Image (cartoon, rainbow, N blue to C red; front, side, top):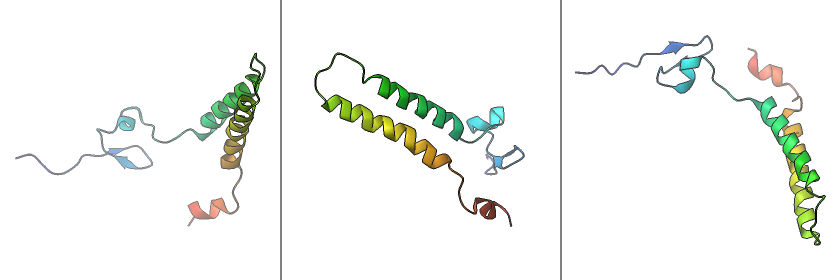
Length: 90
């Protein structure tokens, strides 16, 4: 009969299931700074698309709106938060 116990890998931060993809290379998490840089570059590309051969301004409105969101949202997410250090300390 198979064992029902789960083996864990101690990564230093949390104990993970060895079948988890992150347990194989020892990293688990997100990269908010990388996402912010990619979003900022994508926003600049949106503003670059304003130069073109289109005649209507509907495209311009959408390009500017999406570009503003792509630049502003990561800045909002990465801003220093008040009393964030208190949540992690005990």
